[in-house]
Image (tube, rainbow, N blue to C red):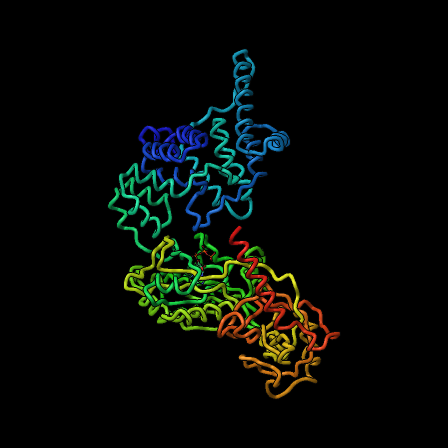
Length: 614
Ligand code: ATP
């Protein structure tokens, strides 16, 4: 960009932008901030309005495009040194003292100015050298250079980045350098939210907030929206359509804590679905066949899930789509789900191939938002679900979320506990009324989540008796994938099941378990065992193992303390894990009793009540 562009009002001086950024930084009022933003937007020529907005938000492009500058503190200091001739060591010292690279950049530029003033005086006095003349920075030039920096990759990229950044610092005034430096190290700290920009756009272009919001939900790119408004006017917002490749703002759920409240809020009937404890994924397939996965925060997370890309390619039979689901970590040998934290471990790993092996995942789909040219968001849920079923051929790794249409409080309650027993967080109950559209970006009453609101870790371990086993698959073929565990009831002299445990076993454990259990193997359920589950192998209650878990929950699947808390429900251990301790020193009748588990449950509930009153 040149000076001429500024005169033609195709660009804006960067110093003008900086003046407003300084005022925004100084204000404590959101209203003042919005006014200042509106002032800046008004001043912006249409050609650079998007660039200004991205800059204010501290990004080069909307976050879902994942454009990274790839410039850290070290590189910025090198660029400052390159531009000013001040040694990196000295810059590092300044940084150590202030901790704000923006302030350091400003200071370093001031030092350079002083040096060049002295040089000018010297040249007047006949000495040589006055420094190169400055070219005033414009927003366009700053942005375009930053974009070039982002694009520099491969061999020699670091040097290219330093040189490009130095070219900006060379022409920057001290206060301009401050914002450039902060931007490149990702610490602009203006605290301007997307919503504040929407307010400002609404004021400047006189567009209703709802209209703007809708556009933003469908196309969450404020730079693009601002540019459309500035170049084509408000009616251009109508052109914004759902487009595979561009994430939409996800629909969110309200929360209630009882089945009866939920049913009455949803008009007596609801589509109730397991609430999986994983990562929400908005999965797109663009016209060119590429799959992209976006997180709940609309970040492109495709790189973290190459396996999911493959699974979706195999299971979803449509050319172009936007569908939603939950990615859940699971154990392929036992089929058990792993808690959300496991998935986060995977996301933190840099070696994706290794992470995929260590944390295998499954996808449970629950929405079809767009399929082959058709925007489905305004259709009722049942129609969207029909479409989802139509395009998905379930596989080992991709399924439709477990759901049921329920109109009975008891049934809903039962389904809720079934979900909990199956390592889910609870249910999401969804309206199926004619107006049950996909409400982008809204937390409304069309979806209501019903989940457990406490998660106290069980501190006590339990000693439980092995009463059955399930065959393992994959790596666990030939041994047991999970064991059926029971607590003892001295009153009836019976064993009641309380969990299925597949976690915590080492390879050595897995190798020796069949040998240990072999002497107790029987062809049917032992008469002293009360179980609703059908194990693959049954045992005489004999071997006691030490187990830990996350909490005790109500469960229609287990028989421990059946009907004691609630008719039709027993108690279960959630996320059980073998501690590694075989209690050969204990007889099965010395195992944890049903009464103890019942009391632990009551204690846990008391804690919950106390916590909710605190
Ligand atoms: P939470 O912390 O409870 O997961 P949230 O604020 O992330 O809540 P909400 O919209 O309030 O999101 O709750 C629904 C969340 O539950 C979704 O974001 C999604 O990740 C997850 N989820 C799991 N299973 C389902 C399902 N079957 N339908 C919809 N959302 C589901």
